[in-house]
Image 1 (tube, rainbow, N blue to C red):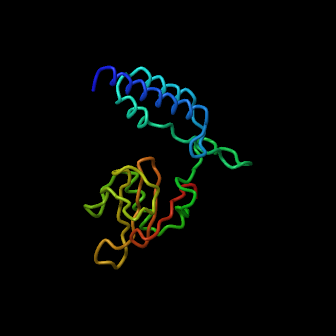
Image 2 (image 1 turned 90 degrees about the horizontal axis):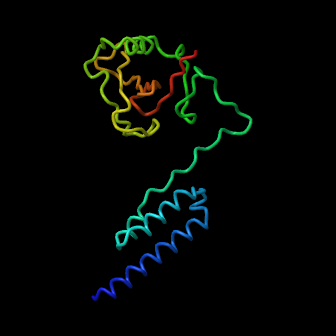
Length: 183
């Protein structure tokens, strides 16, 4: 391939990239989500300043801005500072006072940092069942809730999240309730 042919191919690629970027900017949407013009302009500028076919790949794989966070439903007001807000409103919650005494004891041990009755208390809970909100590995930790009359750890657990949320399961992770500390 001659240098003249290479130049022609490069110009054609740049024209295609610029045309695609212009179409993207002019459409203003992608899948129903508005896009920031400055982000699209930056993509077009980056594509035009690079003089190789790699520019086309970079422009097509550039990170896209995430969708804006939804607004709270109309008629609702944000919770005042210090108010408990569920980590996942779709998940049932339970008042702390409605938990068995052993669960309240476990919550007290967690608040103090131990000592715990079982050496596996405090290990990472991996949320394999996906019953809790999805978080990075290592975010959740589990603690045994003593089950009277059980010869082993039993099925009851408290699972805590790194942001302070606490969950109760009486059936070994088949279901969870978020613990509401206000009551």
